[in-house]
Amino acid sequence: MTHLILQLYASLLRLYPPEFRAEFAEEMGDVFALALTEAEPAGVLTLMAICLTELRDLPLSLIREHLRERRQKQLNLEGIMVIAETPIRIYRFCAYSLLLIAAAYGLLVVLPIFCLRPALAAREPDYRGAF
Image 1 (tube, one colour):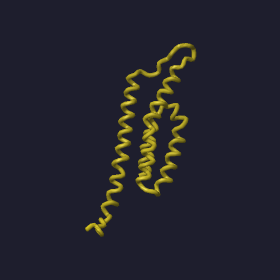
Image 2 (cartoon, rainbow, N blue to C red):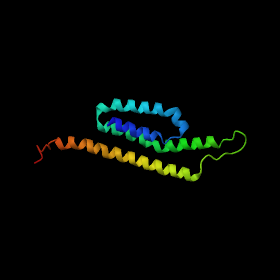
Image 3 (tube, rainbow, N blue to C red):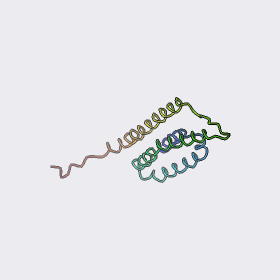
Image 4 (tube, rainbow, N blue to C red):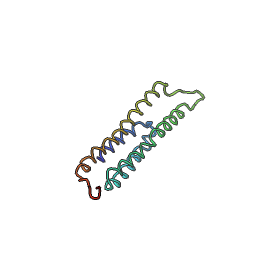
């Protein structure tokens, strides 16, 4: 399960701008992998909490880094403004990002349900003292 989460996280890191990815993606992946391996013995709910914490900050971070890269591309080296991306590309990127984030949230909700279902089904209900 940890391997699947790491693959999903690696695909989410690809949403960042290329310059940001080149500088920080490997370190971010390593830190996330370390957090997962430390939390894995604690159970599925702890893994899910770590993933939700990462996903909570992802949309704002993506937007901030893309705007920062866009501003840097618009900077003038010789006094001429260069527009790096058309608005359509930005909207398309936002739409794909939101779809990928929604899929990640969906996996984080559905995956633990399937992992916990056998454990919950195996437990016998305790009716002592109910009547």
